[in-house]
Image 1 (cartoon, rainbow, N blue to C red):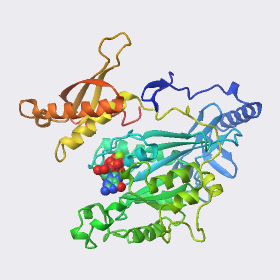
Image 2: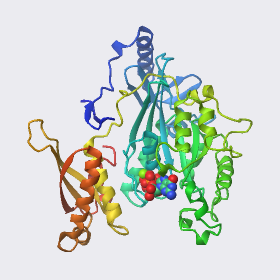
Image 3: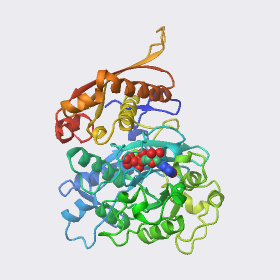
Image 4: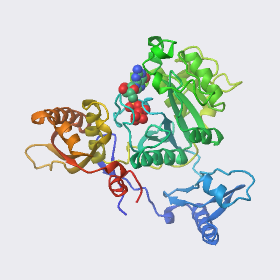
Length: 463
Ligand SMILES: Nc1nc2c(ncn2[C@@H]2O[C@H](COP(=O)(O)OP(=O)(O)OP(=O)(O)O)[C@@H](O)[C@H]2O)c(=O)[nH]1
Ligand SMILES: [Mg+2]
């Protein structure tokens, strides 16, 4: 299998090699691998094995060179081994001894429109993920990598689609699969909510989060709205996002930062920290900086939190005044980096081109229409050095579900599609840092959101 092409911090494409032969690993690592593979083979009848005191179902063993990643799903374990007295959750990594470096997965999970993509961009100080004022902008799980040589730490973030309670069609099922996958693979979960304590709308996932021994950090985003909202929910523009007075009594609508912190301390009692912030203020604001410093560990974490002002009761666990550097370093497990330090993501520029065009459709088209749109990049041609004009040529198809939608996307006399094209091209030029020629076509792909074959082709469902 060829290694993926990645977008790196310099904005150009390069290749990474995730797979390195175990034969290059130190002797003790090789011994551990051979032992593990023997165990897997021996237990292939039950497809399970024991690590520590946990009995787990073997789903995959991924060799990343120095690290061997084992994945197991708790529900499989529970249903396949009913004699186990309690549900065993295990997403462990067996890491070669590598005391010098820490590397871990951090997933951003929350309701749609909470600012997950905005926050990831702010943490990375890059415009990687598309963010719009429409819910469900993000449809895939998107990797963003932050490596600090100084802190000897690599954080592999996953932006995820906003959680929805009840997927209405196959596309949304695929999106929720992406959330579950990111949840499973993470060492740390960032629960993203807002001033109004908007919950994760899937109770099962929320309970799974609370039962899991993953590290949790709650981000209360959009605190800039604190003085703009009314305590009367009916007068608040965000009322519909909250379900304050129905089923789940523990979800309480809040309108002050203090109230939101205290509410979430009750909802996620073992959260390492609850951090209020305004992610849309960019990467250098105090909240984002405190979060980044906490996750990287070791760069005067108390100072970064002091910059947030007086600690709000409930920000830390009971008895914890400030998280010190040593405690912060325990958030991310020891292990070698999985990606080259220059790597920003494992997605291609082609992928981000389609995301940028889709985000433009979200902002330019009204109501439900953007949800019926998918963007496929037919051609992405970078200029050769000898070309006179250094232009990236992109040819994209916007797929809609019905003829009537095609008419709206194109607009009278092609006005709408022209508008979308102009704006998308500007965004693409910012992203690619160079001139872009963009061709857009609109095509009807009947009911693609419900078509399993199409969804697999578009990367929303696994093959
Ligand atoms: N006022 C305010 N708006 C914010 C803040 N952070 C994000 N936003 C806005 O909230 C909207 C949603 O942001 P996104 O980053 O797309 O949210 P998301 O959680 O990724 O949304 P989905 O991808 O749909 O799940 C955008 O219009 C952002 O500009 C913030 O701190 N304050
Ligand atoms: Mg998003």
